[in-house]
Image 1 (cartoon, rainbow, N blue to C red):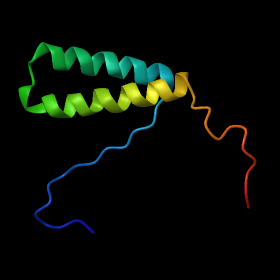
Image 2 (cartoon, rainbow, N blue to C red; image 1 turned 90 degrees about the vertical axis):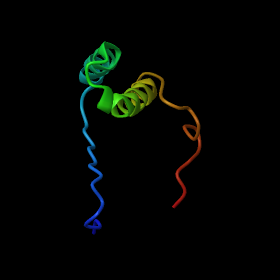
Image 3 (cartoon, rainbow, N blue to C red; image 1 turned 45 degrees about the vertical axis):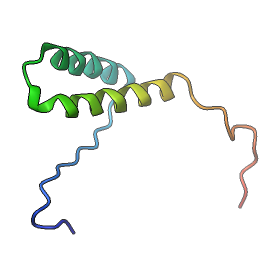
Image 4 (tube, rainbow, N blue to C red; image 1 turned 180 degrees about the vertical axis):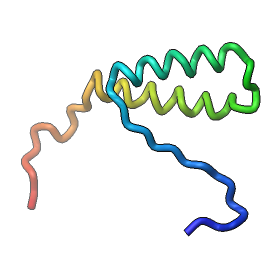
Amino acid sequence: MAREDDDTVYCNVQMSLASGKELLQLVTALRESGSHPNLDTVFDRMQFELTMTIDIVEHPPTWGAAEPTKH
């Protein structure tokens, strides 16, 4: 349960790869425009998260791929 003085908002959104790329372009343009300076750190985090997950989808990690499942 959240504390009453905690004003942190969380957003976990799932989308297709194409939508993720489009959203990354939009967030990048918004950040570069400088028109929302109070959201710069939010845009930075969004860019990081989108870039990281797009890379994982486009280049899936190979670690553990050949290891059998252990039960």
